[in-house]
Structure formats: C-alpha cells, structure tokens
Length: 102
Image 1: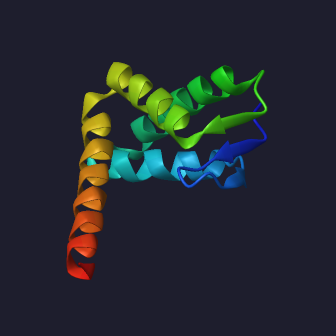
Image 2 (image 1 turned 90 degrees about the vertical axis):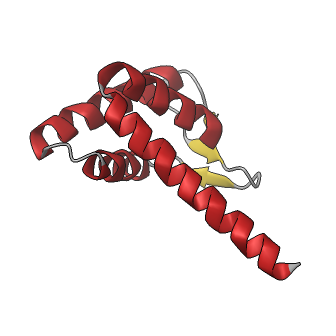
Image 3 (image 1 turned 90 degrees about the horizontal axis):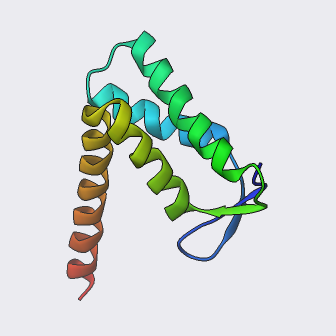
C-alpha cells in the first residue's frame, strides 16, 4: 500500500485512508444516500484505491480522485455527481478569491 500522497502543491503527506473515506462520506451524504448503502459505497471505493496502490510507494491526489470517481461512476452516479459538484463549488470560490485580489 502507498505510504505517501503527493499533493497538487508537490507536498508529500502520509497516506490516509480515513481522509479518502471522509470525502466519499460527504459526497454520499450530499447525494442523500442512506447510511447502510453509504458504507458499502465507501468500502468499494476504498478497496479500489488500495488495490491500485498495493505495489506503489506513493500516489498523487489526482490518481486517488480518478480512482474514486471511476468506482463511483460504476456503483452510484449520484455520489459521483455530488463529488464533482463539490469540486465545482470549491473551484468557483477559488476563482472568486483570485479575482478579488487583482
């Protein structure tokens, strides 16, 4: 299993299964998925990331994102859409902050 995650900034951080689970949990809640089904979705997506990373020392956040989204596209598109909607909101907030600076 990967020991490290390389962030967009290039910073290296310890791999955290818990962080990935939390992100998927938030998306599943936003998609109004019931707890029992949420847990199954989270476990399936985490399993995909762990399988992919078993012979790797490090992963990028982009790799993790892509793996999770591919799995969510298969098992529950509403959760995938919730994840992407959240990303879009964060991107718009970032753009808004940059436009205020300039």
